Length: 462
Image 1 (cartoon, rainbow, N blue to C red):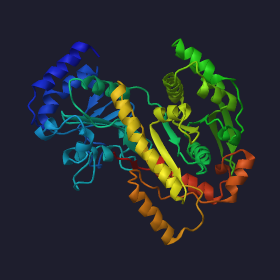
Image 2: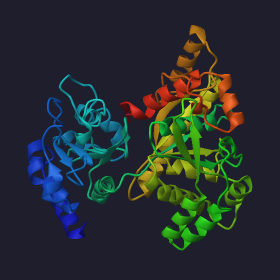
Image 3: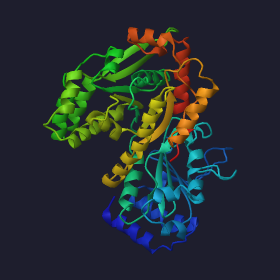
Image 4: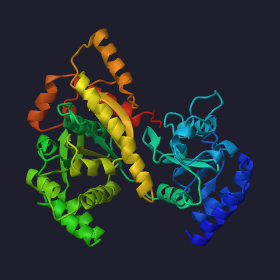
């Protein structure tokens, strides 16, 4: 990506009128963006997403023509309304405008398509199903990501400016690189809401679907490590990796991590086999790393993020377990996540703490946008109810609904609620996921939850 090409794009963009049609953008600006990104003619296709589908994005961007597209593109016209909008609060402004909503695919009209539909794994044939969606109108741009059925914003919607053009081009570059794992934290600041149990069993439910899953234990209590009988294969891996990362020796750091991961193999009661990879934790090591005065907290968080990035090359999903307290380990985890799923129970206190996490996520997101060259940011997947009694009744349900509304919680509650079953405790004593008992009702619930959150079409908006 040459600076001269970037300057050419910026100069052309600056010369465009504030009201400019979609066709004019496609003719006079978009080809320069493709050139600046280093795309060649064969990588750029137009046309529908399969015969009889009725979905026709503006472009499909390929790495290899014998593989599905990497990016599906939706272009909208430029208008003076977006051009004149101030930078401050631009994302909130966009989300109130129909033009942006049409680009994303909100159901404004029966004819509306947009990124939501173009990345829908229940509508689009696999050979046309892209990993990313990009919306652009000359004044706003945003990347959306698809992992199986989950579709969510990879980045906030940003305003097109001369200063932001390098971010725009880096986002497109990111989308064309090999896809990394979806990194998720199942986290709440209240303990006792089945954080670790959900991490293990959601990971196991996905593993039984053939997904490569890694679980990382960053909680000094080490419940995940004990819960899966994971062996410590490399003592003090955090310290050893940090030493290599300080030297920028990423290959050696990756070797240390690969050696530290313990692959646990399991068999279900109907004789199916699956495996979970576990990066186990030791209480003394995690506390030592957390409390060390030899490294600045900022550097510790950076090392955690780099470690997760190195591991993400080898998996479809990564789930991280951290303590409910705000410390350098949990903040490092949150700063490394793509998505955060918040477990709660039928308790007002857990909903209150969930709302605090919900409010913290935009703060973390804005910090990344302001500080990082490539603002890939965490998004709230919503609430999963855990440790639920068999019946809650309409009175309790109304209290829950009212509390969620009062707290202005932005994430959606999932329909699948994880009820209390003795088999979950049996599984803990057996140091195995409850998924191994295929006839247990809780196994069905975890599989349903994995489908609802990750595998079937699940659109997470801004």
